[in-house]
Structure formats: structure tokens, C-alpha cells
Image (cartoon, rainbow, N blue to C red; front, side, top):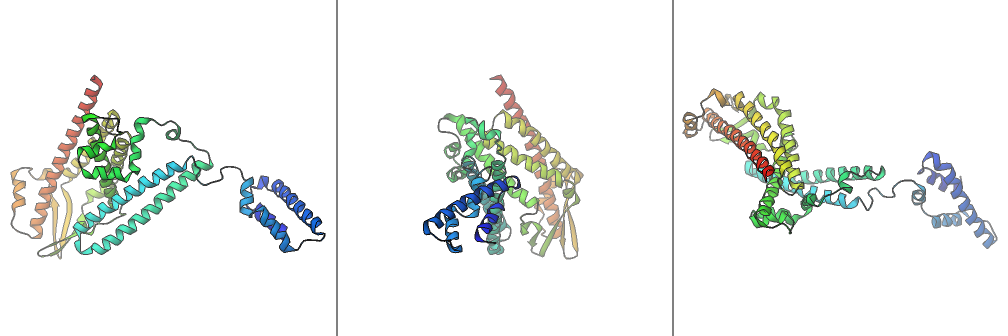
Length: 376
């Protein structure tokens, strides 16, 4: 096989079967005409090296095949690339925030493992970043290849542009500052007054909720681990913590509830703050929170503590009285396993009760906002 046929074969391998024969025939005629012109100029037959020089002038087989190929010439075209870049920047900032928060929790739970926590934080960030960039590139390539144009690409609204602050590190810094003025920076400069500041605060709160919920979701799914939650130290030695069966029973429900909360927070950010849509979405979300808290409260057994041969259950709920008797458990002077279990049971009982009250207040508050907004 001479150099021309080998070249044409390399080009043909990059072309679709239905167009390959015609394109290769056209390209062969072009190559042969150039060779004949050069041979006529030199008055002799060309060597393989001289033929290869002509092929170099025509171009690499991959480049030549791309000229004939149908469809987009790039993986992600210039129209879609700004959206890809925004998604990459926003996603990397969120991943970094989640890893930093997880690192802080890990260090507080196990200060002696600071070095390992740093290593795991970097590993988590880079693995998450590679996954994010790969997913964005794959989605962008599919949209580019099949000419998919979602509604958000062509029918955007100015009121929804606040979401693009996710890709601005300065906005995240403003929300971390904690001041009303800084939080109001999440809104456009044209929005003034106390209402704008309140909306900015709600967006900042939603962002931090995304970060905390994201960390919880990764931990709940087993992607990250906090050793301080599975064991802790007492004066009498190390204590292992095992979850009660109720957590396995509610695993899928809690997973769906956290994901739903992330979606609602993302909608809040995308819409530039809370409005009627987010108020409506938060009502069933809070109702689900009450149901989950009640199921846990009703179960009455949440964890099992083990220290050597000693075993103690962390219990509470309606089986115990939520009153001064339960609060007195916090004043137990002993630091044994049984006393620790009683203390944790008392704390968790009150946490669940307060959570249910808080979710109930959230439902009432959002209903009030919807009612007053309609009457304006």
C-alpha cells in the first residue's frame, strides 16, 4: 500500500459510512492532480517522500476529515461555552465550600487527625471537581451534538439572573461577612431599601443551607465520614456509637427530604430571594420535616452505646416525660456509659420537639406570607 492509499484510509476511518466513498474519491482526485502537476513541473515521477510532502500540505487526516464531517466542529461551541464555564465556576466554589465545612467538622470531632483530614479534603475536592467537569462536559457535548436548546438558554428573564452570583467568589465573601449590607449585595444594585436587604439575607441563608445540606447529604450517602460521630471518648474509655433500626427505616425518606430541601434552596437563589413560589414549596417541605421528626420521636430508640462489655441505649420520646424530669437528666454527675446515654436521650428528645415546633412555625409563617402577598 503506497503512501496515498494509506493516507486516504486514515481519512476514511474518521468519516461516516454513507459519505465515505464519495469523499475519499473526491480527495483522491485532488491528491493525484497535485502530484501530476508537480511531476509535470519536475519532469519525473515523485518519490514517496515528495508525495508525503504534498499530503502534509493538504493536512493531517483528522483535520481533513473534520472539514467533511457533518455536525458541530467542537465539543462545546462558543454559544454554549459561557454556560459551561459558569456551571464549572459555581460548582467548584460550592464543592470547595462543602469540603472546607466538612474539614472544620472533622477537625472539631477528631483534632488528632488534622493531617489526614486535610488530605481527605483535598482528595474530596479534586475528585468532586473532576466528576463535576466531566458531567458538565458530557452534558454540553450532547447538547451541542444534537442541537438541544433548553428553555433557560433562549427564554431567560432578568428576575432570574441573581443565580449567576453563584460563580462570583466576591458574592460568597459578602455572604460570609454576615452584615445586612453585605448580604444585600446578592441583589442587583437597582433594588434599594429594606426589602432588598431582606431578600439578600434570604439568598445568603439559602446558600449556606445548600452548603450544610450538601455536607449532610454526602455524609448520609457515605461519601464522606466523620469519625467523631461513630465513636467518642469518656473518662472510662472509648465509646462506640451504633444507629438504631429507625434510621435504616427512614433512610430513603430522609435522603429525598434533604434533596428536596436543596432544590428549594436552589430555587430561592435562582429567583433572587424568597417569593410566593418558594413560600409554597417550603410548606410541604416543613410538613415532611415534622413527619420525620415525629417518626424519630415516636421510635424512642435512636442509638446504642458500647464500651467494652457494657451496652446502653439512647432513648427518649413519648415513652419518657418531656418535662423537668427529663431536663434533670442533664444534671447527672456521673460520667459512666448509662448516664451518658440518658443525657443524650434527653438532649435528642428536646431537639426533636423543638424541631417540630420550628417546622410548624415555618408552615404558619409561609402561609401568612402567601395570604398577605395576595391581599396587596
